[in-house]
Image (cartoon, rainbow, N blue to C red; front, side, top):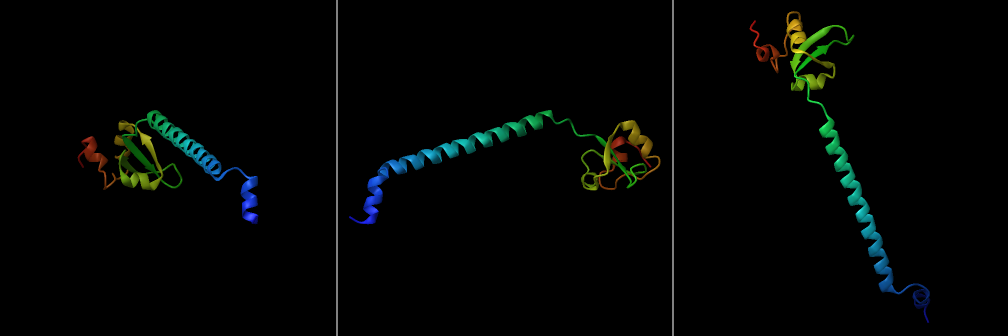
Amino acid sequence: MSSRSRVWTRCASPGRVVEQQAARQLALIDRWIADEEQCQAERRRGQERRSEPAQWLIQYGLNRNNIDGVHTGDCWAAARSGRCRPATRQEVRDALRHVPACVHCRPDTALGLLE
């Protein structure tokens, strides 16, 4: 008798080994599916809880006191600067008296202000 045949006689039958491996893989796939469903549910809850984006943004300078510009809430330039804070319509109107409006989103036009 060869050494290979002795190993198989001590272990479970080959069919049983395949069955155990398939069951293990199925359990692993079920775990992955459950994890992915949980992630999707968390993402959905996060989107539901997220507040509405600001309609107006004021861009502050590096010292965070000086106002550098004014943007609409969906301006791509404001998103890239990282120095903007939400503002009310009146705050934006007041700021436009002292600083230029963004040339990309034109908040002065959106407010109906003419220069």
